[in-house]
Length: 516
Image (cartoon, rainbow, N blue to C red):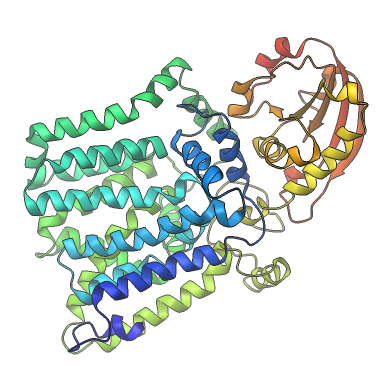
């Protein structure tokens, strides 16, 4: 494989460029799928499966497409870990293809196309994104497809591509609202370069109309519910759970998230787009990246929100590398590819559940607790958050079932299971049926919108209580068990309470306990 990357122009190569890219794409898919069954189901995957049982054009904290994807997967592939994670793994493989296609569109030849496609694989944040069934698994693919279509539009001088670009942007918005950052960056890049001419056509307005129409169902839902996502975002920032980074730290984070040895590639790609004569035609992409980066930095966004745009810099950087090593320095290609691969292998266990848990803990200790990815501002745990959130769910449901099934049959019918966390509620909904448990209710995120159903509060099993808004409302409270998986996050270590005789009707209390 490295020989294919290092000797792009050898006569009669063993494999065609397309064949190498296919192998690289399959390698990415195979890595993701081979590790799909390790550890357990992720907190957000549980939640999206719960949303799939309540299909709607909107949810409190995310766009709706992931719920429809989860519904499709659950009905076609089932809810095993391999079933849930098949499409995310495929999304990773397709990202390799699209990155190579972008490189070809930019003028990259054999080595550049293969190098850019390879670069997508050993990236910690992409390994993590394509491991779970979340909207992040599809976000880079949608972003890069948009940019590839834009390049096709410019190379063919065919403005009708705006219709396809608008369609992908509309789908992207239904997948994750961050698609607006790519759209804003793309328009910014086009505006300040000579390619602004493509914004002056009627097809650009038609593309905007397509995007708007595709996003409209969710927009109407947001309007009808008074834009709960904005309230959720505001509360999330105020809670202190967001990792707020200085500009310098934000930039440093990018280097770590994207594999430190790939930094010369994407920085070189940015330079090629902005400064080189050959990159002049595609300068809008460099400005688009700076626009996206600057906007996310100004908004104090999470550091990994920039991640979906880097493949286009890998493409440009691979062309620059192909050019500077063309005469007399081709041996450096093999050296660089090997170094990136080694760095990727070292970082991979921090992004994917490659190692058994105890072996991973020893591995992490050898790096003095280092982790390339921090999603939230949480206190240190035994495991990093991305792994800790895959433990404890089944045990929690089993212990809840013991409490529920200890009740008389008549009392079971009026007993609600109340969760303070959407992960706990969603775990009850996924695993509880086999134990005869009813679906959970909860105050967190969209669970609050789904309401208390017909429960009055006469008997409630409370999970994850902190004693600041639930147990004090009952006449009697009895601790019935404890959830204490050593690998789970600290907040998932809690008592299970059996609470009786709510002081007021649950429907009256419900508006006061919302926790977005």
